[in-house]
Length: 261
Image 1 (cartoon, one colour):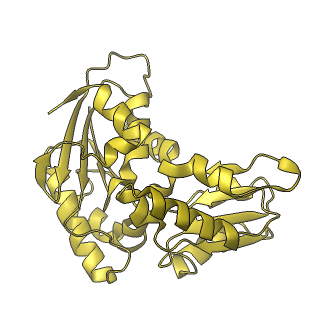
Image 2: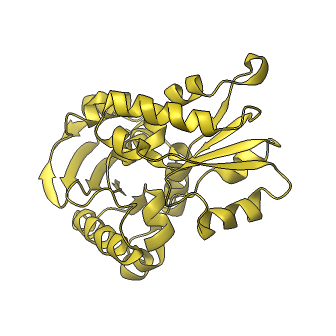
């Protein structure tokens, strides 16, 4: 089995690590775009052009499924990606975990990039899945880029600034950008709760991988031998995990478990 994942940057690492844990026997193809990132400030047409190129690079390895582990690409490019590759290659998009977060009753905050915050896409998800729940949309300028570059000072500054914009009474926080899952515990620490209650974080990594497996009729087999390979493509070029990826536990895990080629 081959599972491909694509993103503009290293935000695909949480989903890739989840895929490795669920299917240690699967070959993973990680395709991202250091030449073109960040995608957020680009026009929708530019984002789609970059996303199609990154997907084409992954598709050349003949995966069984392709996970679009990127909220920005999922917002702007899923129809074009599906038109290009399906039904031969199933495309699985990433949707912020607003539905499960709202199920707890709120109040809920959604941390996302400035481009996604307040967008018709995100507002539509709130209206569909969080009607009647108090939801605060919190823009996080600079955080995704800081995480991608593993810039500790910039991460700290962006997290603190977003935490200051987050209402004090929220109990649940949606990580609306896949990059943010790499610093989830730092976010949890920064957002203090009344009475010291633990903050509930909702990411997408495990859910999107589970959906990808269901789509191709596969089951998680976490006890399978760790024989799956790891292929890394940087703007279409065969490479290895860069040092910034290895700054995070997910990147180190992917490098350690399975063969890199």
